[in-house]
Length: 253
Ligand SMILES: C[S@@+](CC[C@H](N)C(=O)[O-])C[C@H]1O[C@@H](n2cnc3c(N)ncnc32)[C@H](O)[C@@H]1O
Image 1: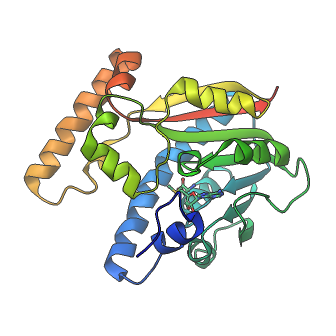
Image 2 (image 1 turned 180 degrees about the horizontal axis):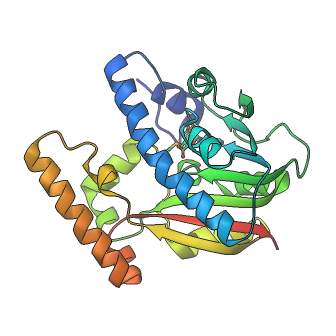
């Protein structure tokens, strides 16, 4: 049996990217590609707002390279590196042959093997909620790049407190349920200053991805419509009720 994420992260994420169940791995690949579209849009928007056109980008915890692939389409002049705990994830990322991706390497989850300030931008996308003590990984991102982008699901909310939701989060390795203040405290603790932030209640295709029947798809569409409207009208209240994806761009203070 695979150990839990907090017991042996490398074993947990090595198993998580296994290709043994072909159908499942194809489906999860499509799921990550959908997620990568919104994650890349968030990165592009926050960098554009800050007037940042990163030339050298690193993704720490790059998984199967889905986000690197989406960003490579968006930032056509940039080069990219990716480091990841899971060796099979890196093999999948390499097999994509993503344009302008240079290094794709499994690493120890602690020290990114590059010199200080090697990059313009370091990305930690849906990674810090998976790490028992995320502060050193944030400090490492701040060491290797001038700007750091962190994205997490904000799960410190009413929906996130439901036992069923907590069981799902635990099963995919979430060790923390953040709110905005906790993310900002983490970022500040790494000597970084937040210069931009956004939250996204996510698109319909995200909510409907695992819906298998017409009834489930209709329920997912209704959920998406209600959440999108609530977040547009009352974002603070909405974030106390349900999970949104939250991205911050930060710079050395
Ligand atoms: C939900 S996936 C996100 C993958 C990718 N960043 C994305 O947004 O599509 C979480 C990833 O964090 C990785 N991870 C966990 N602990 C890590 C660490 N200490 N350093 C780097 N990556 C880590 C896992 O192996 C996994 O690939």
